[in-house]
Length: 275
Image (cartoon, rainbow, N blue to C red; front, side, top):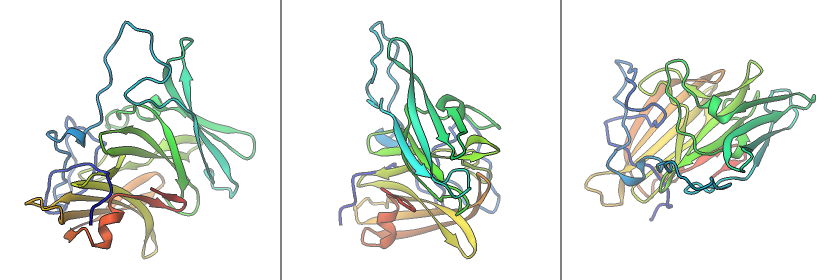
């Protein structure tokens, strides 16, 4: 069975957790009882986002390559937890020349108030975590990722040759915040890869483990000797405390492309979001 054209290739460990949020310059915080995390290989062309174009003397384009993203987008959800549907919008902030300077993320609440933040502020370094590489913003949908009390928006901010990168945005303490991994080897993870290629894939999904709302972060990588039939499968299970994610467990198995776990490792699945 040929998997869908999506993915991010990671190096293989016995049991691992997926992350692209913390760069190699920041030491990982590892639980002494937890397996070592696997990391993206720097030798694979699509394992890292495409480079940003350098300075040019030509006037900036209103929709510059290589991203070509310049349109506003929206998602509908219950973001403040009061049971009413609200609009989460993403729109470009432009200079007089028309060039995109930043992106505005905003929730229009049912009582007429709004909560907003610039993309550059959301992805900036904080709490010892590095700045994220955000090239644009597209709202892909909203769902109960963190539980039934309120929705989070899933916003794409970058892509490689076959892997896309998104973040989970919600309201906390009357401000927009990002879901962030708070412990373990992947502490600081705020961006989640999804999609993939024939050799690797990444995905995430919401669900329940017993009575606990959890986020599953998944990965498959071609199992040596790369026969395109056997894959290393990894799943990290996180529990929520506000917008903080705490590692509950790590799982690993060698599976085939016919295994039901294979396809879900390329997908984002929560509520109305399915991609």
